[in-house]
Each structure stands twice: as structure tokens, then as C-alpha cells.
Image (cartoon, rainbow, N blue to C red):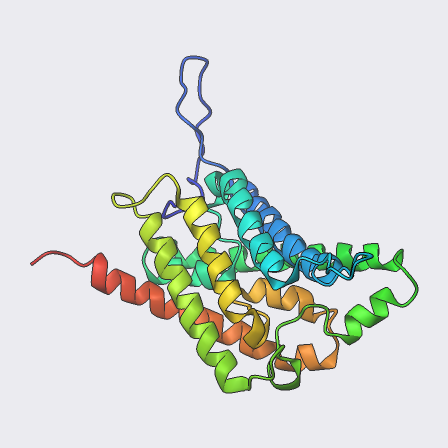
Length: 265
């Protein structure tokens, strides 16, 4: 991931010059929006359409459950990382953007535009899910919204009834761990060409661990995207899933820079 989304003056290659041209600022922001769109569309669609699909004639569940939702998140991130990562760096998550900036891997001046692009991409994704729902069975969309529209939550909105303290802890902890993994596998000298795969699988693990607690945010753009259609309770609790993933990302970014990228003495 470069320190600047684009050079100030891109140089067009000649016919004999095969040096890649850095993408424009517009291209990087569009890539961030598309990548976040893909992530949110994958996880919310799977959660609402496929997680509790129903039962076959012999009573076997045909739904994918939260295992399927976890896999959907990881698969979409892997796809987005390889499709859009080379253009924008593949953040797709405000907490990741803040964490990379804290670690010195991304310019602070680029944080706000990236976050706006991510929020827009996520909101477009859930809006399209709503449009699909308008043509669903009678009552489907209303029931989905009454149930929170796969929003994150605590207390009565938690799948297992965990309180706000648990939500705060897991969002800081697991977002921080996620950002540490990203910083490790994308390091300029210690990273790996399989970074996208590792990042996606880490996100699968995180969702397997904390979906029962608060529906697993670790991404404010995902939380905003679902909460805008999830009703008053989801909107009232949204601040937790904006603030604390970003706190986790910042802690991880500053810690990684201090612990692993410090100057030798």
C-alpha cells in the first residue's frame, strides 16, 4: 500500500514504456467504494436471504447460518482485495484506513475521502438489497427491517443478549487484531503475495468468533450501511460500531509502528 493514493501529476507511458501509471484520486476512491460495496452486498445479502433460508422436505435446514455469513465476508474481501486492492490499497473499512494512517502507511489527508467513499459504497449496497426486497414475498422487507436488517447491536439486539461492554471489548480487540494482520501481511519487506487471502480468512475467523455477540462489525461502513435500514434501535446503537472499531484500528496502527517498524538503535 503506497503512502499516497496517487502522484500529483501522472505521467502517461509511451509505447515503449511499460511502467505502470499510478491511478488518479478519482479512480482510487471509486475502487474503495466498489470494494466496500462488494463486501457489504455479500455479507448483508447472505445474512438476509440465505442464512435462514428454510428447511427441506425432511426438515434439514437449507440456510447457510452464521458460518455461511462468515465465509461470505471473507470471500468478498478476498475478491475485492485482488480486484480493487491494486488501485486503492483495498481498505474497504474506515477502521483499516485509520489504522494504516496511524502506522504511517497511508497519508492522514487521504483518510476522510476514503471513509466517505467506503460509507457511500456500503449504503448503495444495502439500498440495492432493499430494492430487491421490494419485489420479495409479502412482508419480507418489513420483517427484515423489524429484525434489524442484519445490523450490529447489543442487549436486546445481540444474537445472544450480550451487553454494551461486550460489544465494546470485541470491537476494539478484534478490529485491532485484524489491522495488525493487515499491517503484517502487506509490509513492504516482510509481507506476502497471499495478503488478500490471509486478510479474508482472518475476517472469516473474526466473524465466526463474534457474530453471536454483536453480529460482528469491525467495520463502521458495514454497520452504517445496515443500520440506516435497521430501525431506531439499530441507529441508536450505531455509535458503538463506529467509534470502537476505529479505536481498535488506531491502537493497532500506533502499536505496530512502535513495536515492529521502529528504528534500530
